[in-house]
Image (cartoon, rainbow, N blue to C red; front, top):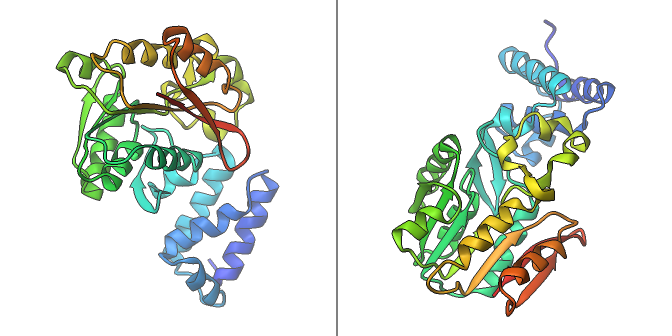
Length: 280
């Protein structure tokens, strides 16, 4: 194999990905990761030769991504969220940037809560981030998936966040234990099954289905959580949901169906789409 410079390797990969209708920028992201450099360092080493072992793995990753749509994060096993690096793999949903806005909303709305519960925690990114931002709070999190909780434990240890994880159906384990939270937060599955065929294969084939899809037009998880919240002996100061872009009316209406005096606010994300529902 003829040795390539960094520029030549990136140029080949970008062209290859374009031919396969993939995003060309993935070439640089994968190569930077394998080289262990940031963007400034990457730009400064364009004429350096790529080590043959690194190039071999780079070619393999690029071809795999082009053919299967395997997400970048499943090659690197890491994702940046709220300025922290989290471990991810195929057992959990890859965190989306929009979910950072859920964190911002919570931090703006609540000051110094004592008890926080994250429902459907997946990789643990919400619970762990809130524990780092609210170090004095007792933070709990639940998920039905034992595999997802394994990933959440990896992240809590990696980031030094003391979060108590429970396996179970949203609030159920905490209701059984008599834990009364000040804050409940959830980014539950909310995509209707009917939309599955319209999703990119990177999402539909590589993210866990139970973390994406919900019955009843995507509302089933919200209804379960709302029903559980009203069973708490004391209503939380705040319950916060991430929602789909078209659920800015349906989720608030569902809340008001069970809590007629609810104060509900819908917050749009940076793209101007309904993304967060706050229930007091």
